Image (cartoon, rainbow, N blue to C red):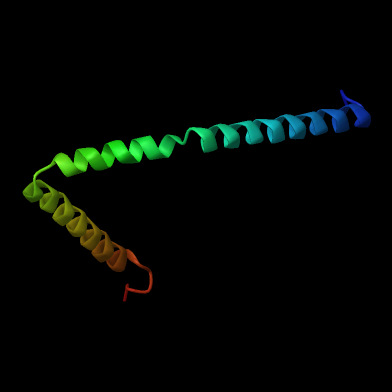
Length: 82
């Protein structure tokens, strides 16, 4: 074995401490400057600028895709086969 047991324990403990500190730093940074909020606001502003007929087209396309996926899932489901 290249490392002794105490050295492995110290290495594992060091990795855990570094990951805990890194997680705390990232969470604090995200609380102070949330990244998702700006992206969401930009997407919603872009959506609001679209004409209603374009929005309706996107909505209908999403509904059609969901319906097609549901039909495909039902068709390929193992309990559906005879």
